[in-house]
Length: 157
Image (cartoon, rainbow, N blue to C red; front, side, top):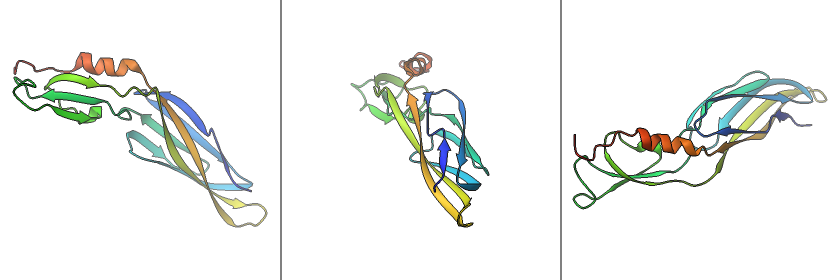
């Protein structure tokens, strides 16, 4: 018999803080539960435990939005535009003039959850890997706020 986790999936909005506990059960005594995010770490913390693990944080940088800018006081006629992908790579106070928004409505982030337990039948240590899927739903307001609150320096101030 193998182990199981609950829940095996959940949904969260892009940029929203969350905390989610994944519990494990098995045909025996669960001795440890750990999780690893597959792919980039984003702003995620994982607390491993004896019978459960907790994932918390926010998915702020999951979408591959592209931002195009030039230096303050410049234009795309006087300088080759610079394109960066992901919001965390956008420097402050530039002459930002184009957004190529990642239009995916949802991105699934997966975690490998490892459950270790003592099997009741064999009295031996067993390991079972399960997948937890976190469905991150696009919040269109996030990118609007980024663009509305960006410190534009078109005139070179």
